[in-house]
Amino acid sequence: MNLTAIIIVAIVCWAIVELVNGPKGKKKDKSNSKQAAATDELQRDIATMRERIETLEKIVTDEKYDLNRQFDDLKKDKVA
Image 1: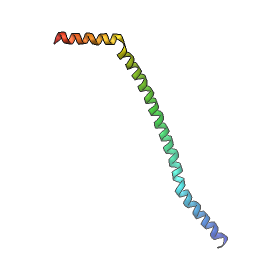
Image 2: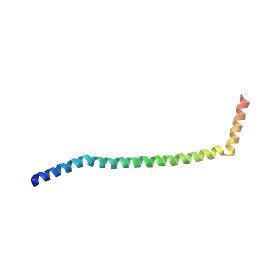
Image 3: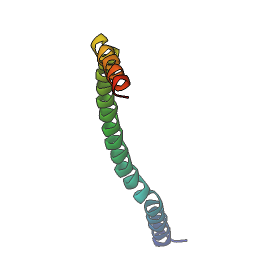
C-alpha cells in the first residue's frame, strides 16, 4: 500500500469513530444537564415538603388543636 491509501484508510477510520462516539458524547452532556436540573428541582420540592410537614406536625401536636377538635366533637354530638 502506498502512503495515500494509508492516509485515506486512517481518515475513514477516524470518521467512523467520530460518527460512533461523537453524538453519544454530546447526548451525554445534554442528558447530564437535564438530569442535574431535574435533581435540583426534586431536591427543592423535598425541602419545601419537609417544611410543610414540620408545620403540620406542629399544628397537629399543639394542645390547642386537640382541644378545638374535642370541642368540635362535642358540638357534633350535641347536634346529633
